[in-house]
Structures are given as C-alpha cells and as structure tokens.
Image 1 (cartoon, protein in one colour):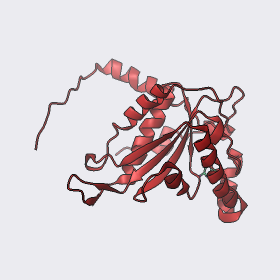
Image 2: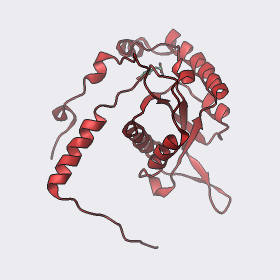
Image 3: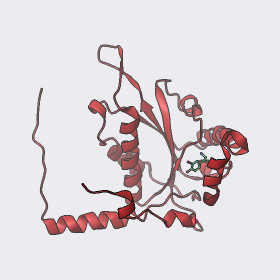
Image 4: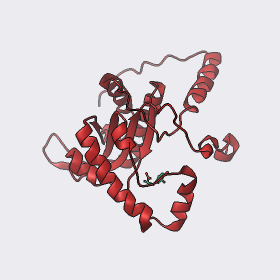
Length: 220
Ligand code: IYR
C-alpha cells in the first residue's frame, strides 16, 4: 500500500456558499438540445472535457470506460443510418404505448439528423472486463455506475465549456461496437451528441420543469 498526501484547500464558508449557488445557476442552464449547428468545435476542447470525465470516481480505480470520439462525416453517416434503423422499429411498435406516450411531449421521432449535423459524437462504453498485467481477463466493479458518473462529469464539462449535448440512447445500440471497433465485453452505454445549438434551437417546454428541492430530498 502506498499513500500520497491529498492537496485540499478549505475555502471560507462565504466563498463556499457563493460557489455552490453559482454552480447551481450555471448547471441549471444546461438543457438537452436536439437541433444542432454544423459549426466546428476544436478537438482540444473535446479532449479536455474527456480528461475531466476520466477523473470520475469509479470502482476500484479500474476506470472501466472507453470514449470513442467520432468526427469523420462518413462514420457519422454510418452511425446515423444504424441508429435510425433501430429507432424506426422502436417508434413503429417495439416501444410499449405507455413509453411512446411519455415521449410525446418531447416531440422525438425516428429521424436523427443531428447524428450527421453535430461536429462530434462520443460513443461511451462501459468495460465489464479488462485485461490485467498478467494477460488474463478480469472483471471490473460497478462498470455501469462508474461510467454513468463519468458521463455526468463529461456532460457538465462540455456545458461549462460552452457546448450543448444530447444524451442519445438508441436501443439496442450494439451497432456502436461494430462501427467503433470495440470488443464485446465493452457494453455500449450512451451516444453523446456534442456541438453548438442551431440558431433557432428550441427545447420542449417541459424541460424547464424541474422537481423542487423538497420533492427530490429528505433530510434525516
Ligand atoms: N431512443 C429514442 C427514444 C427516447 C427515449 C427516451 I427514455 C428519451 O428521453 C428520449 C427518446 C430516441 O432517441 O428517440
């Protein structure tokens, strides 16, 4: 076992209050966008946001995630075609009526033009196994939870950098493994669409309706 000092600088309480509230105000302006601009976003900005994602807490520090970053228009087109094939089935009847009714206010459908319009797509995989230094396959711990937290960090980092995202979950999304050349023990987790919103971008009105603190908490 080897330990190293934590570098932690406690802040004055007044500054903590200010920062906690400022972060809430900033993150509360994040909204999922479905109308993307084709305006280019420098690769280094995406890379730094991915570095932030890679700092997420995770099971046994195995960091059980992989981020496949897609900017090539030909690959984006293949992803769009594969995603729309699944989505057509979903909206045509694979999804139960109740689910489709819940989605109705969002105005979503099988057409996914943003998969070609947006400058970057990030396919996120949860690694359920890894190859150890002994060359053998080992299981990871809490791969879904870890990857989910990393995605939260990534979405927050991208928003903080001034970008919009869409957490897209075509279902099933095994086509991501094939197109991104990832092994079967990496489970496709999320397809994140990243870029600037289109000038005329709109969001569903209900997206502004967040549950209150009282509704989402109990204090003991
Ligand atoms: N994956 C589909 C359907 C969909 C599902 C949920 I849950 C959403 O919050 C939004 C959409 C699609 O992307 O259209």
